[in-house]
Structure formats: C-alpha cells, structure tokens
Length: 168
Image 1 (cartoon, rainbow, N blue to C red):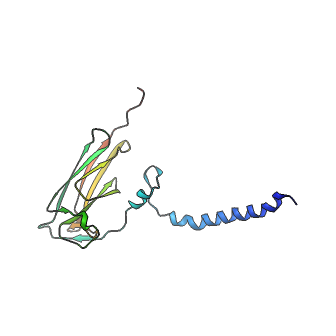
Image 2: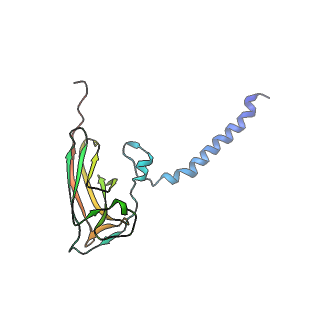
Image 3: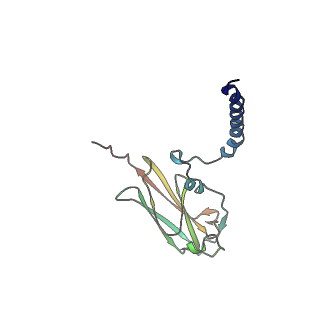
C-alpha cells in the first residue's frame, strides 16, 4: 500500500474538521462592527462601542462642551475640547460618579475612536470627503452626561482633501 493511500483518510478528516470548526466559529464574528480599512487590530477591537447608561442632570450647573477641529500643519486634524463646569479626571476613570467630572468620548462619523482624559487629541488624516467629529462628556463610571435626555456633546464637520499626487 502506498504512503499516499495511508494519508488520504487523514487529509479528508482534517478537511472536514476544518470546515466544521469554521462553521462553529464564524457566528461569533457575525455581529462585530466593521473596521476601517479592514483592520482587525486589538486596539480597533477595544475601541468598538459598548453600551453606556445615561445620567440625566439638571440644566442648572450642567457641564457645557464645545469642539474645535483644525487641520494639523503636518497631517490630520487637531481636536480641542472646551468645557465649562467640567473637570477631566483620568485618575478617577472607572470609579464612583462625582458631579461634573469624568472623561469624553470622541467619534468620527459615528464610530468611537478614543476616550479622552484631557482637552486635546490628534486624528490622523481621514479618507477624502466630509466627516463629522463628535465629542460627548461621560461620568467617571462611564454614563453619558445628559440634560433633558440629550447627551452633552459637541459636533464639528471637516472636509479631508484628496491626498496630493506624488511624483508631479
């Protein structure tokens, strides 16, 4: 009996086993959010949005937020959050709620890209076209600050030009 005929059943079993594993494992990845540019890095996976509660607070004394997004002289965009009646508290992240303290979440076109523990952030160059940059304020225990059910957030729109053609 040849060497190949002895290995053939094992190759068939291995092929069938691989297909079964794929069928069993694939549904776990079905509901994952799409990643920009097809990336599936650990960082991108960690930044996928998860559920947050909302903390509705009275309008009197509530934090206020505005956002400024400016082109970076080298590449990308510089984000500046301006807050009133709010303190960034990175040392308290994940801790108990304290009035008007916490962090911010930054979104580009509705996809969360960062948790901010201070007012400044750099966004690398975006794909060409119009993009909405949104920031929202969150409590130390990760609830969104809201007034009358509306999140305390600010929005800006930027237009990323086509990259320059190289060699011209």
